[in-house]
Image 1 (spheres, rainbow, N blue to C red):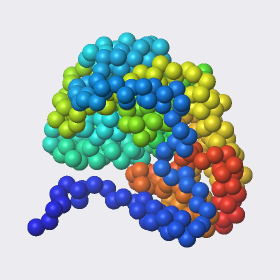
Image 2: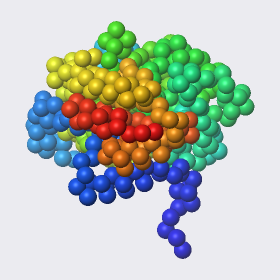
Image 3: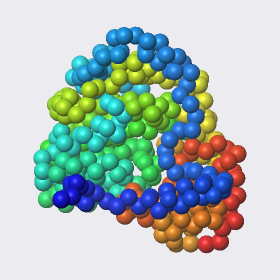
Image 4: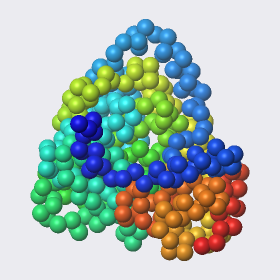
Length: 392
């Protein structure tokens, strides 16, 4: 007897294990490791959010189960945010669901809307949870290649008609992790038209929508497209925008029927978002234009400065890299035509710097590595100096 379900064998291999092992060994040996690996903000949650939490956590009403789709104050705040940010009106009662972080909602969505054997379209490279959630639901994964030549957008016309006929769900992710690409409204228009034609749901992962560097072109929402609510939902997260990765708070918005299905799964699997955390979400979203937020994620903020140091340094060292317009990642071509695992391993072994091999996000990520902008400018400059000394 084995206590391991067969479905776990269908999950893609976790290709970061060797990198993680080497990182831990290097740290244990006393080496000065500079880690651009996990996308986890290094700065603390802003004080005004923490202060709201300190008040909320003392209220006895927040000590009980927070069942359902989220408190009405939080959902109203999300609806207000969407009007001001995207010009989209949402019904907070039916078109907003609070999540234990967007990852949880994304992972549960296929269970809510996909029947065994139905097809899910998944970007490659892409966030591994899209594949994991599909496998757990018994769905069939069909990858959509993302390539630099097409601006890291899937070429939707290349997907065969027979695949569309069996498709129940399409995952999109813009601004994109790991490629950092942004999608124009024209792309969302094409996707919505196909979803309406072939009767499938679109799940647009917008976790990085507020981390962008061109104030004249903020990333759009798919829900800005006419008719999108009929075929689409969108996931948002407070994790990266407000340095709240450990707080676990996000939300899904859009198609009411799909959100009701997601909420039914959640009601059977979790007990809702802690009420005090929802209160902090109200405070955070209401303060998104505060100086302490803009100074970090804004066009001239912390991530922009780190990006500029890293991109300039890599280019000077002979790397080919496009300067990202959004997210807090840099997606760089591997030097010397080497594969991504070789490059990531060599950088760690020879320079004590951690990067993520692109192949870990899918086969189309081969030939690239990802840097997370979670290292301060001085340490970033030091890491680039080390990388520049390597011979490829």
